[in-house]
Each structure stands twice: as C-alpha cells, then as structure tokens.
Image 1 (cartoon, one colour):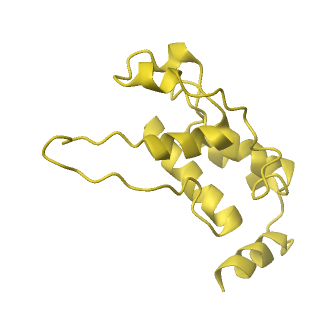
Image 2: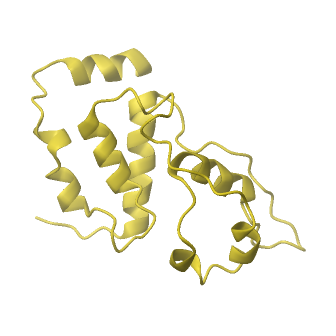
Length: 139
C-alpha cells in the first residue's frame, strides 16, 4: 500500500535521516521566542544554518516568502553537503538520498515511494556496516 506523504514531511524525514547518519541534529540553531509584537517569529538563524549546508536557494523558488527581500541580502552560500565534515564521509548512496530528501523545491523533492526504492536501501543490510554505524552513534 502506498501512502502519499507531502513534501514537508519528506523534508522532515531528510532531517531525521541526516541525524541518524551523524548522531547530531541536522540543522541545529537558536530558537526565536514568540512575543506579542512577533506572533510568528522569523527563524533567521535556522535559515542561515540550512543555507550554510545546502546552499542558498534560487530566488524564484521563494519569491512568495514574505521576508525574502531580507534573506536575499545575505551572502550567497554554496552547497557543501558533499564536503561537510559530518556528511561528506558517508557513502555516495546515503548522500544522494539525503540530497533528494532535502531538495528545496517540494515539487522536485523525492516522494516516500521513490525514497524507499532508492539505491541506498538496495544495499545488503546483512552487511553489518549499517548496524555497526547506528550502534556507534546510539549505544
């Protein structure tokens, strides 16, 4: 049975997958508190952390984002996922899946079904590499 999962849920799966790979939160940042003057706080630090790893998205993608003019003034960040100290050392299929789960454009993001059919999951799990990896970080 196939369950349709929306793009934001797939993004969350990507964040969890990244955390499973490293044992650390994918995009850890400072939280901005809600106030009467700011009922919906702008999570600037969160965006900077995301951009510093995945690179700055292209402007047309977020043209409807209310604070985009502010964000557009930030420096251009390159995508460093392949060379990042936490993620650069993982096998190519794990990095490829992570990139597809964390695609900025939800219309281009991998679906749940496509993710389950990804090469990463075709690797033999009888090879204890995966089990050892999870045990190193979580036990």
